[in-house]
Length: 422
Length: 57
Image (cartoon, rainbow over all chains, first blue to last red; front, side, top):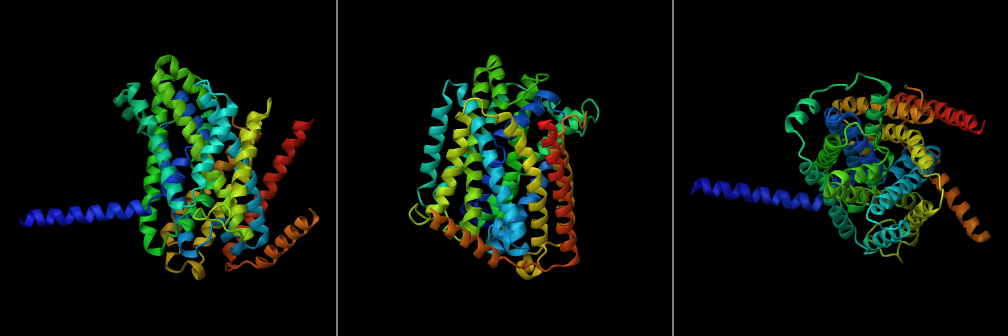
């Protein structure tokens, strides 16, 4: 009887913990899974097609990288009750504030265009015209946004996050060799030697793991959700779970293309989906659905990151817990970015490849600044108090930030000057 | 139209005034980091401009 009562007590404790987590869950999971956006899916598909399973170990390293950077935004948001844009304005003054805000606006808009490129090309595989996709996406996002509750928005978005896991059954359907995955993928190796091409792919994978909008989005989401200091451990857990899930999805994409398309040059994920359809119709369809979902998730979060940032600085009402009448500018910013970026995709002959490349270049002007500001703000004892970075946290996150800054800069430069590493 | 523009510029001025002084403690590390960022961005923007000129040529 004693054992049963102990077991029951443990079960009740666990179920309470799960219930509590489900209340707190959201910002970390959403931001991390949305990080696997249309550009991310293309990078992972190209990684698998080019190097098979050989870079899975590298993707695993990205779990702590993503976690340590993003968990800082949880603490900063919870303690200061400010989004990242407002924190930069307040901490470093108007010059750095405007620099970050304008850079974020340009980068987010350009990234939104790439999300629409991914979504339209994914649904094109099923015969859906681009204008129908753009119109449908804007209408769908309008319905998600205009319900006037953060909680509803978050739970619907988490439903789309769950759809991102579609790559997992897809990977099982192509019957990969588990021994090859374990043998080739888990032992660190540089397939074909450490050359410029491999370095470029590794940098691209890092570039898709940490994007500037993620810092702004998660911190604002934490504030909009109303998380308190006592919620920080759950917020960190949410971020860790998100980091693990995002890398797991990436690994399964690598497994799909590494099994079926090894040696094929992949320029974008829709091309991979079309090629996969020749081998297995369902796997190709899963890849296309996943690409659309990734673009949609990216679009949902990226446009929100900008609207939140502008609302914080201009002092407009900027919460999803308001109706359109109560926060007209917040919703105007959101839909303006969405509609204009969607329209670019519909312009015949629009320089979409140039825009995709330009995103990487603009990102390296904002990412180092946003990361350095993040570390400095987390060391501000006056505002952060006991949630200030510890010595070990500074050591780990400082190292990660330096590596990300160097690699993302080299990646941006290699986009500007393609022959740099060849 | 003009009044909207006037309101907008007034808002920008108000924001600039509100955030005119950094509220983070300007320690040596913070100053060094901001200097590094300025140099980094200057070099990067120069490279982007150089690339732009190359493309025009």
